[in-house]
Image 1 (cartoon, rainbow, N blue to C red):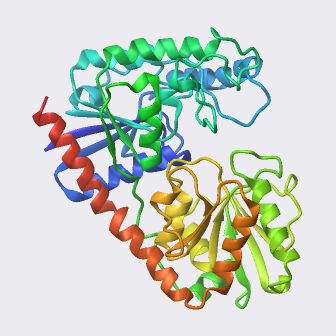
Image 2 (image 1 turned 60 degrees about the vertical axis):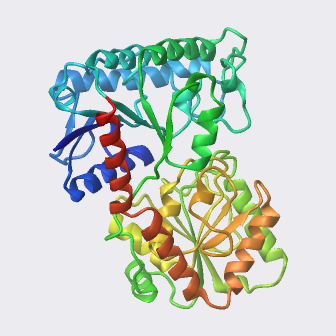
Length: 423
């Protein structure tokens, strides 16, 4: 049986961690792949997930490196909400028994003082096929994870808009050079979870000549599935007779990456049009860590806080009439896939990998990028749609046909086997 080891910084923390664990489960289900996960820093208690920092000393050293990188980063970065990773720290994994036993090494998200360019290049010594899923842009930039309109990664970075001391030979250019040297030594096959990510990779100066496959992420369709809306609302103590808009983590009105300001403006536009009765609408927000830095919304708002239980999260989607995601750049956001799987239509901007999941006027509404007016049109459209059950059915079918565990696991299995046979 083909042995695959998945390598990620964390176990389930963030979208990449969840994608890694979900793929691992899906691969073990299909029966022809022996899949394992090893992470840099383990938070959870799952005994099936192994860690490279399996002693108190190694774990402490890892935590210290992660924290030190964050503290040092503040000296170099502008006060902007764009994540950026440095390459100061890292560990070697080429002597780990799970890595040595694998037929295929599958990399996922490896930042936060885990695999820097030097330690990535070492993997070439193992002479094994390497697959790397790009969950964000960091692997092919000089440090940033979210690019927005910056095109410096098409050249060799430098003059980085995120750095306080931007110049042609700045840290982003130095990191670009480190990655370029490592990638010259390391042969790997890229998986892009979305067509947008593939198009981005093809523009990168670091990825010239690399082969790319589009294979989306998957999720647990036995958990994220349609359920009775009224029963879901009862579980969450939400009103039975209101139209419920659901949205995710929004730290503040000033937040840039999640687009909270656009959502707020579109909701205010909806009220200003006088086309609906505001008392019949409720906004439900999950993922907020607190309510202190929240804008004032024009509708009654319920904050559910951080939800760590997937079954409760699925009930949130099922309870809602529509899920709103004003994100300005996202690869293949899980919240969209989870919502659709639960049969809940999605209103989103036309950006990133979202159009791979949301089909305009079929299972949701794709608003013009950064247009609050267009997003507001989507809110009106879903509120007034005559046959909402048809939208819910379309949403669920999209996930089952394109993103279900069996479909995605099979695509990965075929790719692994092709790399072994052409090895």
